[in-house]
Image 1 (cartoon, helix red, strand yellow):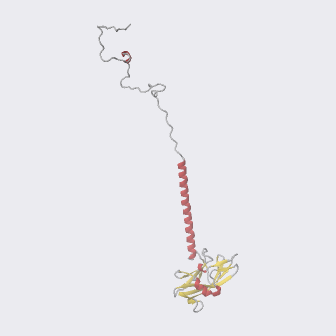
Image 2 (cartoon, one colour):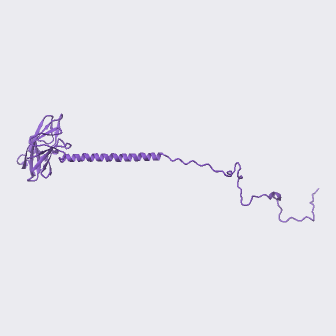
Image 3 (cartoon, helix red, strand yellow):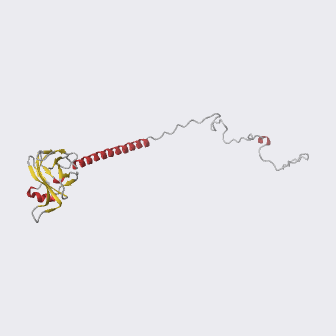
Length: 241
């Protein structure tokens, strides 16, 4: 049996193409204008925040303390080094100033000729002085002065408890203008012969006698000598007459 559709002559044909979607009454729902909802609605357990919801405050990030500690330690070390070098510089300068004053006779203790005067382990006695000497040593085999030689006779006694070396290069002479003169050690070897005072070691209780030789300009008159156990001692200043 074949189905034959019934044609109703009074039925108006539908306008437009046939609709295959849901019934028209099901298409009436739409979102309110101006509000487009994406995802679950507000208040949904898996949706956006509730109305009036405020996110929790994040705690401030803690600064790392170790850079400041390391920096402080470095600063303290730098300041300590600066202070140490400053103190070292002050101490070194004081030592240099004291040594310079010793060499120049500024710290020397006053003495006088033919009277024993002590500096360190040595006891000095100046007995004579002679200037205007042209040369020292054997004739034809000695040393001539650049100007003239002044010879100072001195005895040195070791009053200490151990052997001590006498170095004539530590001894100085001065004229009236306070001009300083050093010993001519080479000339002193000729002037003293076997009794050389150059780097002579003196045992405790022993006495060495010799001549200190100063090469000075012609016509110079020495006013004093300053005698030292060593360059580090103050020395004794003996006026020369």
